[in-house]
Amino acid sequence: MCDLAWATGRTEASYEHAARGKLAARLGETERSLTEAGRAVELAEPTDLVVWRADAYGALAEVLLLADRPSEAASAAETALALCEAKENVAAASHARRLLEAIRAEAKT
Image 1 (cartoon, rainbow, N blue to C red):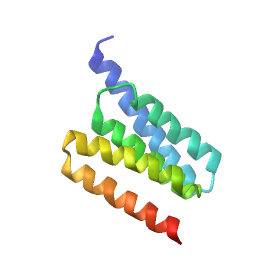
Image 2: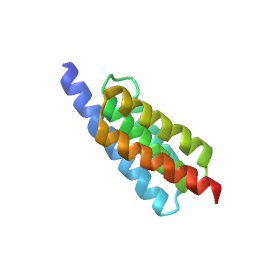
Image 3: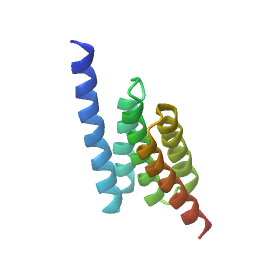
Image 4: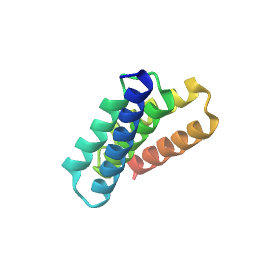
């Protein structure tokens, strides 16, 4: 299998798990949401596709916030932000920064 096919399959699966995780979180299915979002990160992490990894960590941060785990959510959002900044992806970094700010604001309430 070529590297592109391997990465493409993992990318699609990761985004699918991220979407399932966010949906489950909004439906109040906490354990399922954490499992799905965690799987998205597991699929993305071993690659060098930085933006994809950042997206997976961003999804995990959203799920953790909805699971009332703001400290872990902030950590995941910080990872997403660091990855975006390392890639110099200004738009994605802005999104990750807003997510991190929302998590920190939510933690203060």
